[in-house]
Length: 238
Image (tube, rainbow, N blue to C red; front, side):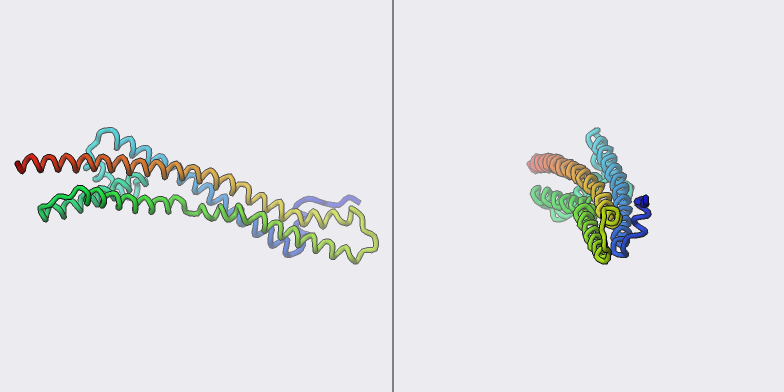
C-alpha cells in the first residue's frame, strides 16, 4: 500500500513532543525573519543618514549651522550627526565655563569633547547592535532543538515498533520521516539567521569604523580651532 509521506501528514501523525518542537521552531523562524527585515531597513537608513551628514560636514558649511540643524531635528538625525552634536555641545559647555573664569585650557576642551563623542558612540552602537544577539541565538540553538525533536521522534517510533512481530522498511520509514521533520525545520530556522548575522556584523563593523574615523577627524578640527583661539588670545595679550 502507498503511504502518504507528505510533510503535513507526517507532522499530524508525529508525537506531541515533535509537534511542539516544530511549532516552536516555526515561531522562532518567523520572529527571526521579522528581525532580519527590520535590521535590514534600519542599517540601510543609518548608512544613508551618515553619508548625507558626512557630505554636509565636508561641504564647507559652518559648524554652528550643522549643530543648530542637528539640535532642531534630533529625532531625524543619524548616529554620526548625534555624535557630532554631543561633541560640539560638550565643547561649548566647557568653553563657556572657562570663559566665565577667564581661563583657557585646550586640553580640557578636547578631552571633554572626545569623551562625550565616545560615550555617544557607545550608545549608538548599542542601538545598532540590538537584536543581533537574538539572531546569533537562533543560529546556534535551532539545530540542536530540531535534533532533540528528531531523537525523541526516533525513540517514539522504535518504541512503537517493539510490539510488531515483523518489521520492514515500510513500517520504519514513516516514523523516521516524522522525526526528521524537526531537524529540517531547525535548519530552516538556523541557516537564514546565520547568513543575516554574518552580513549585519560586517555592516555594523563598517559603520563603527566610519564613526570612529569621524570622531578622529572632528577632534583634529577642534584641535586646530583651539590652537587658533590660543594664538589669537596670545596675540591680543601682547
